[in-house]
Structure formats: C-alpha cells, structure tokens
Image (cartoon, rainbow, N blue to C red):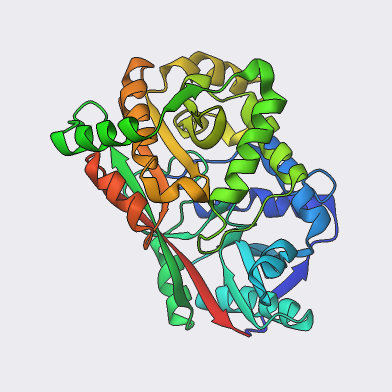
Length: 375
C-alpha cells in the first residue's frame, strides 16, 4: 500500500456523512449519474434504522490521501446468505474511488482482511448491501442514466477491479422495452391462450387499503419464488417491511400486479415509475425544502417504468405463468401513461426470464457484473 493512502474505519456521524457525500466528487462531471437523496441514504446506512445492519455485521471505511477523502468501501457479512447457501462468503459494497489503482487495492484489501478475520473464505461484490438491494458494477451501457434503484459507475472501476485479479461471478441484464412498439405476435398470443385455458389465473392490481395483508402475500411469494436463484437471500419480515414502507409512499398501484389461481396468490410483479428522472433534477440530493417541489411537479410526468421483480411460486414456475405478467404490464403500462420500461435485473442464465424479455421485444441495454475473489 502506498504510504500516502490511509484507510480509516468510520467512527463518527461526520465521517458517515463524508462516506455518503463522497460520490458527488466522483460524478461531478458525469451527466448520467443520478444522485441519491441524502435523507434516504442516511436512513438506509443507519445501523439503528436499517434492520439489515442490526442482524449482519458491517464495517465502513474511508480512504484518505494527504487528508483528502479519495475512496470508500464497506465490508459486510450476510448471515442470512451464509446460512441459506451453507458457505462462508463475505461481501464488499458501496465502493467508490478516484481513478487510482492503489486506492482501490487498499480499500479492497482492507475489506478482505476484515472478512478473513471473521472466518470468510471468499468475497463477492459489489453488494449494497445484498442482492435484495442495489448490486453489481455497470460493465456495459455507460451512455444513459440508470433506472430507479440501479447502479452506475465509471468504466475505470471495472478496468481496475479486473486488473487486480477479480473474476466474474455473475452478469445481470437490464432489458429496455419500448411499449409503444411492442407487437404481441401470434406466438405470444398462443402462449397466453394456452395458459389461460389450462389455469384459471386472475391478475389483479395491488390493494393499498389492505397494505399489510398484501405485504404478507408478496413476502411469502418472494421468499418462495427466488429460493433456487443464484445469490438469493431470504428477506426477514423486518427487512421486507423496511423496504415496503418506503415503497408504499411512491408506488403506482396500477402497475403492481398479483396473480391468483383458485383464490391462492401464486405470483406478483412489482413495477415502479422511474423516479431517477426526477431525482436527477434535485440539487445536491436534498428533497427539502426546494427538492420537494421538483418531485411533486414532475411526479406525474414520469413516462417510464422499471419492472423490478417478477416472482412465481416454485410449484407453478414450470407452467410459464410469468409470460402472462409481462404481457399484462406491457398492456397496462401505456394505459397508465408509461411508454417504455426497463426489466432489471435478470440473471444471465435465467433462460425463462431472458426468453420472455426477448419475446416482448426487449433488448439488453445495460449489463452489470458481480465480482468475486478468494481470501
């Protein structure tokens, strides 16, 4: 490590604020970066408020050179992941740094040592802090802003990480779909007709008046549906509620779908307006006082969706029911004023979901990568 680089664990609220605000330095001249809301980041990274950090140890670090912050990283142990997958994987997340290989190396080596001391034998990332949140480095598609709750980074992050020997663990695809030109061809119509003839599935919108009941239904489906997927981590009720209560304030219930067969909820699709189109206009990530006016004035102007999650209970997954949800959102989207969508993220080897995205006319417009290294 260069003697000019010093890595310090965060021990004060002032240092945590430096950690949160550091990305503004990295992306000052990047027209495609979307700044986070400061209040949201403070809450999300709070050990007291975010239930993830109550159950899982993490250490946050800043890198300094000559007294100036030049990078940041978090080292994370996800007990839920390791219990579920029966391994000893540690994670790094929230990595941001200036274009300097030594800074990256110092930060990553610090995370490695912290994880190794706690019994981990490998490291993956970036996870911010898990696959249930933002994750992955952008490796392709740097020319457009990210959609809501997707990551963005300079290309040199990828170049430096790979020069340090980090290997691909998995790629994640983001599909762009222009709902205005989607043609529901004969093949899709035959698939839909065949499924509906065999199964009396009803697809409805979520009912916010029964929010807690709907939340319990969706949580059950989520933890069942994704169980076999690479990197899946079950969400605790506290983690699910923490995320959902924030979403409740901003979801458009017209594009959150629940599927039922003979009264049993068997699947759901969560789509959200692409709020990044507004957040990009809010100065310095501050919603109050003036950013709130920007949000309220532009909220109804959002004309694009991010399809975040589609979950089907495992016993129904071989039946192709997911195609019905995608068809439904493609139909409903334009009716609700949304003329495009991003389906993200989709695992590179999730053949069923990739096939469905392509059938709808989707094209991969961004690729994200999770990296790994042994300890």
